Image 1 (cartoon, rainbow, N blue to C red):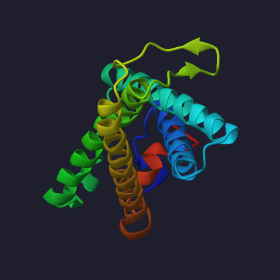
Image 2: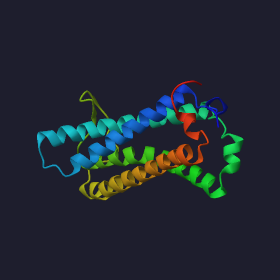
Image 3: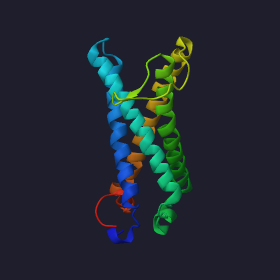
Image 4: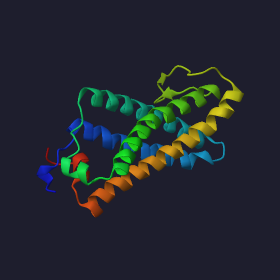
Length: 185
């Protein structure tokens, strides 16, 4: 399929998609790195950065969802939709729905965990965010694994999303990846 035949997402939607993607990679990598560090000023600094990145993920997600509600995405090209088996269309919709759910729940679980553990989020060291839940060691112990497991689930869905896009680009050669790519309109 030619580049011109593919209906692309709006440039704002593409920018939000890639900004969120890069933020997710960064916040996940930072989370993996910092989790097993010994207690130190460096670890505290990295936890702050991780929290800030989580707030950015939450913000990008909210803006992206608002944009999508106001600006409908382009329809899947008919040739691609017809060539896709029903299970692929179902997987496509389930993956996107799961991603949006996790884009919100992972940062909110992290925020709740941080609040329950008694470590407030001070965005960029300047703006304290309200505690999401009261301080509770028991609640913190319950929220920590939920945050971690949901982050792994989100990483798995992101990998599935990327694998699907690469399959369409390199195996199907149907131009689907170009919809979210740069250049042209």
